[in-house]
Length: 163
Ligand SMILES: [Zn+2]
Image 1 (cartoon, rainbow, N blue to C red):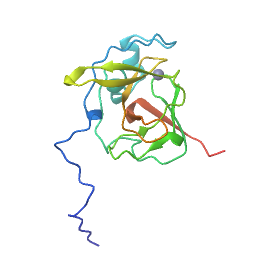
Image 2 (cartoon, helix red, strand yellow):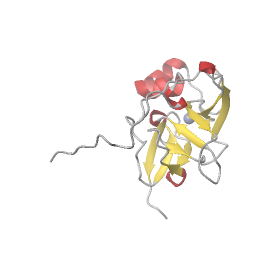
Image 3 (cartoon, rainbow, N blue to C red):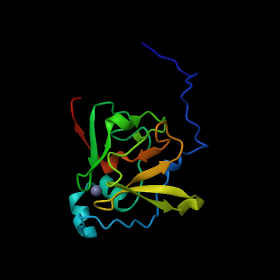
Image 4 (cartoon, rainbow, N blue to C red):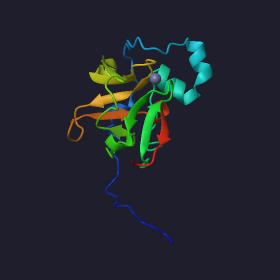
């Protein structure tokens, strides 16, 4: 079976990279309860997790664990296990990164201004361990109008059946 789809309307425009695709250089101030040395983090995390969480890196869109995950459950911090996002607030943003319109608890997800790359973006991080998660943009759906654009590498998913 051959499938032609050269008229695929989902073609991404390479000239318009999503701002999620750029690494961050934010000054994260998260005096949380989990604190480790850089060497300890390197031991505890996979290279991808370390690069995103501790070095504010990013991962490629559409080629990460959770962008298209539709299972019910909770997304915890891959660094410290703190619950950060729920499948109930996950939506398809079309960006290729897992996107949420709200956090489980704003006590768990902190934000700070990231002015790297000549842009002013809102960086998001885990308040417990200071791990970088992604960015927050003001173009999300109702009711919050926010889009948390999060790297899969910073998340650990726990599947839960609906109540
Ligand atoms: Zn954490």
